[in-house]
Length: 277
Length: 339
Image (cartoon, rainbow over the protein chains, first blue to last red):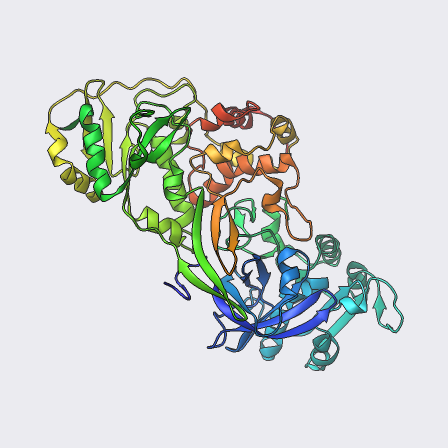
């Protein structure tokens, strides 16, 4: 009888939901831990399989590990399992296994200016990198966050966006909404066009991008136009996953498994893969 | 040399089955495959050591079509894991051919290497002893030799039997586990010098030279549409393939308790890559077809240094649309594909 089989990577550990934050009408952030704190250590950008028994399992980016205390998952309600997850309360026990994937190249980016570009729930994976940079502030240059959503209500992590991050040293947050909205006096328009307005110079910079496929596609074109080379642009991919350990087959793009070799790739690496991303 | 009298096989199997779960090729009415010797019914079943190839591959010995992973029970405010099912019972596969054994070598690569070990697979694999049957007469759809497999020297076997065409098999132990079988079977093994059987030529051959490299340049070729046109995406090729290992993980709930299990899946199905929210990176049959053949012939090769097709010929026999992987290899080789 195993209660927590840490040697078998396909068996989850049980954790408790200790806090739930309503981010948007369809996104909640769940803080989870077991009696000792985090079930495992996670690097920024790594994934974990969240298991709501008996409903299902789903792979999510860990949007932050708070010291040894808890893991945070910002999860959008989009299918059967996430719908059910949004209905449980604090104190509920769920399964979690991981960490999976390579994570962001936090060390290779040291000394660089950081440009984070995210759309909608795409900020969830980038947030772990942004918070990491802010925590190790001296290791990174200027930090810019460009974030957009359909409406004000759909912006995740509002507290950090509008209160916390802009107060950090040498840090700028640019927020945009797809459409004008009463009470919103900020920028209106899609992310790629805002990006071209802002024109952040490519010198000494790394751009990290995540969002809906269509936004990524156009933002990549904008970056290319502004002179960013393929090694300077990093993204994190999403595919359907069942195992998380490179065995079950479905998350491949070419010979790479997104769960294992990814989810983080730079554009130079992506261009070597078949165009299925 | 050591030889084994064919007439003693039932006694040999009874003996092996005392200490292990023994899997042998059986013809069971219309179906043939590797079945537990315990299930052998003298009235309706026949030993099928001669059959090329048994219809169902032996992969289910190591990767069952459905297997329980762990059970859980609902508790106040959540859930607890009750039991993890790792099957470590000793197993013997007797009479496997070189192609199917090479497929197991491929499964070993997928499940036991590259960072994570699949403990469910490993528990079975570590406790499995393999007696392979050397192939001297290839079948009409066999092309293992084209895929780098030597049918006379099955790679990875613990012991090998060779059919001399007489009442004897030659018996060769190849590993310590094979030597252990020789000791267990000492009472059945005789010393006798017999000539090795003559091997016959393959009717079907393909030239794999340069195919993986060529495929890597033709991902966007319109020829994939032509090749996949007849495919009904039924998935039979993946189910009968000895080296296809993709799986799904699902749950069975029974009131307050339940278990999670995994089962074979197929890359030919649309749901395979369908994400919550509706995005599907391989939504069309052509994309799935292309991914399957590229996985077999290019991607697996790139990752593990061997193709994921071992030339057993089952998919050629079973495909209702007549799709033939050996012809796809030839098409890849010969066509002037533009990227």
